[in-house]
Length: 102
Image (cartoon, rainbow, N blue to C red):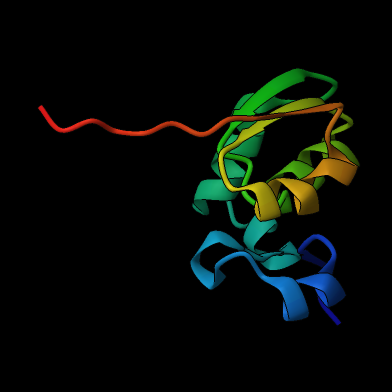
C-alpha cells in the first residue's frame, strides 16, 4: 500500500475544518518530478528552517519534517486546521484579520 502523508487521519474524518483545507500527498506524487509538491520540496531541501504560511492541517508540514528533517514554524488563520498541524510544528502562529471595505 502506498504511503500517504495526511495528519491525524482519524481526527480529520470527524473534525475536518473544511474538506477543501485538507490535503493528501502520496508517495507516488512525491516521486513524480513534475508534481508541484515534489518541486517545492526539492527547492526547500533538507535540514532547513521553514516558515510555512498557510500550513492548513499540516499535510505538507509532516512531509518536510519526516522526510526532509526540516524545522517548521507554521502560520495558520483557521484555528481547527492549526490544531491538527501543531504536532508537526516547532511553533504555531495563529491570527485572524478582518477586511474592511474601501
